[in-house]
Image (cartoon, rainbow, N blue to C red; front, side, top):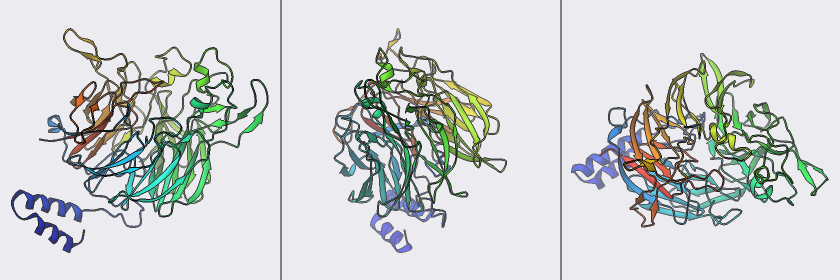
Length: 542
């Protein structure tokens, strides 16, 4: 915002409260941080522009200083927005310049007033019913340079004007018929980086006659202006055909990129994490890997769990068809965190084994590994052990790492010393999380004392939601719960008039921006279950 624009804004505001509010907004506009030459997004001081928050994937908003340990307990619900026809809401919002952007399972991207929830525009991708009905938009958008970038359930990457909702371009990133995008985009130096994943291990492999499997996960670099693919890095080698009953099979396959990429600008290295193989025993699946961002060439790959081949056919007794000798589905869903320890660049990520791995960023060599939960099966099916591990990602606030475990009986939030991996504090999911009334009775058969969400943080505070439907804020210093709000089984009055129901919190993380806390609520899933819901909730101070 230039000086003339500020004067205009103040003139329109008049006097009194409106004038003061305009002054605050004008000053905030002057504090835009362009980070010249760094390729970082130009955003307001405490906005949250991308799922990862920043290119190293810290999920730490250092500029969010309105919410503090002293006042966060006073947070109140400001508004609720409901996504029509959904039983899950997992598109983590981005908040930039007073507008919130979030996608729905109906295949639409919504732009809302961040303060009031009022709808500014809606963009329909038309992909809500492709592949799997009701899955539409699952990843979180990235908003950079006045453009909203996001993926859909048909493996399309979209670019939409942030102010008007007008389409700029869209590009199909994978031509496999069962490919999807769950990875949230990272925008860096006018390129969009994103991973591709797939429903082949479920929708394809479950069919005993399906010629399994041919999908390979990939990381793709796309020109942010035109949508042209610059390079594509495939996690696995091209699959080869093998014959035999019940028909032809292919391997290797899998290695989906469920997670979001992160980048170290200093070394121009992109880091990714990959999923399990569907067939074969490739060396490169279930790995943390490093890629040159300019060429898409591999720098190194460290496969942390070899021979963990698994697909959904393994949970349909008797196992057969496309089911290999089953592994445990210990793939990576969590993104990679990049930071320094004593001048040494490192990269780390949590895995569904319950282990957080820290590696040398230049070589991929293991520095330390900390087991935060022990894989145990909550369900009598092959591969359910992975539900006890680390699901979507950690946060690093420049001092400590914050990592949460999924259904680890119960899920637990940890603070780790990044130099050693030592646990500094731990806070389990409260044991009454799924109980209501007096005497206490179960809230819902699908309620779980689990913390799968990606962790978020701001100075002095850590944010983590639970499958018991509670959004909680913790002290970064001690792990004490400073604030809790129950969203489960609550019927919300919504700003858009659509019936809103709260449920479990899963598949994304909390967003803190400009004194507000935003979270999705609702996560019904055919395999991992969970309490359904369809709302986005906004909290602020009185």
